[in-house]
Image 1 (cartoon, helix red, strand yellow):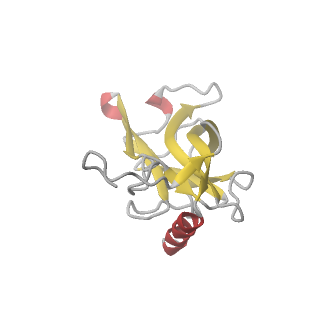
Image 2: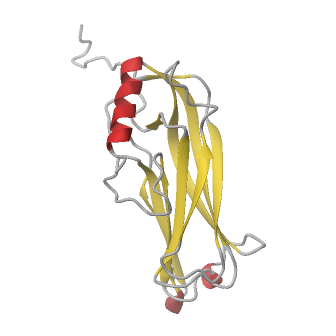
Length: 194
């Protein structure tokens, strides 16, 4: 039955927990050549369960870039010239490489663009979690894999003298999916593993 001309929404997932945060930091060593990529892993084994169709719903991802031993945010010394520090969070292991934006495993990405010559820096977020589906949690990215992967790297300029720390702060929830939804997400996830 339709009420008020609208079709009722079917819930894809039921939240098992409130929101909580997971974090991972990767370190770009001082002096790293342009094109360097560093990877880190977040273990989700305690949250994802195949037998009970339990998954992680990622609501948002924030990236933080910090400079040197005092973890400052002054971009003047992050790179030795004009360039960018870029980062991606995926649910399939890309090794130490970035994935193209149409890769189904890409959860969030962004960059810190540094214009040394004009003393300008801008932080951009290219993609925030979204499973692009008409579900009750459509603003969330559903993860049924047991790990997340953070990759960061510098382009067009060498990293300055200090280490650069790139942290992903991930707001998520544990959810229970219907078996068919869990399987559909698992199939989609493995289909994008090239």
